[in-house]
Image (cartoon, rainbow, N blue to C red; front, top):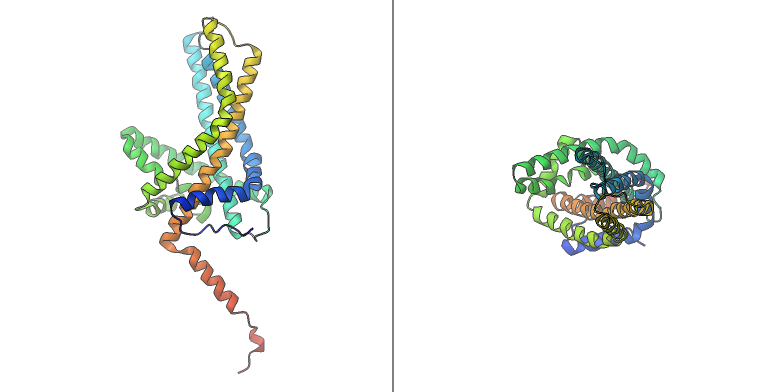
Length: 297
């Protein structure tokens, strides 16, 4: 099977088709990388989310103080947010380092977890710092008005891909992401919005078991006037299904990141035609193959 060309201009439907074609081709190797490298982060997020959900269902347990309950909720919510951020950073580093390796690999070579892990270690910290900057910028934008926050969030989705693919500094990547997005804000927003909806429907499969146990827990609490602990089997079931749902949603988020990657390559190609220039250089090298030693003058 021929490799999918990354650096290529694509319209809206072509980017979606390329996203799912890439997933079909790389489902196993990329899935392994996300699971083995990002899995521990996703697992932590699932555990903290499970404790948070359990705590919300136990708010009315007899003998619990309201301030103590909300304090515990705040702790679990904070741990959820931190682990979620780390999980997102891990996923985006894995996906884009995988794409870097994919772009330069021979057609038949399979990318291994070890190769991605080696790149992951050198990129994770810088991407984590960039993620904090992006989060702060978007939050500040939303604090002033919703529209500035939304406007900033779209071009800033390209900041981390630029850092990973082009090895730019944070400052260089910040200015470049706004330059690339010029006149393409709506197409970028539309692509991410549509793919996110598709992924959301796919993720509903993972959410069903967790919803069932949440409903059972809420029903039990209502029948006990919100004054009793959940049965052990419900607590265990709620925790396991929450971890299952979080792991599934985190892995599916890779689809959105791949769609973002094809938009990034599309924007770069439209402005710089790097893919075409690379092909011309390769063609020139292929033509000039005669040994100089055999030339006669």
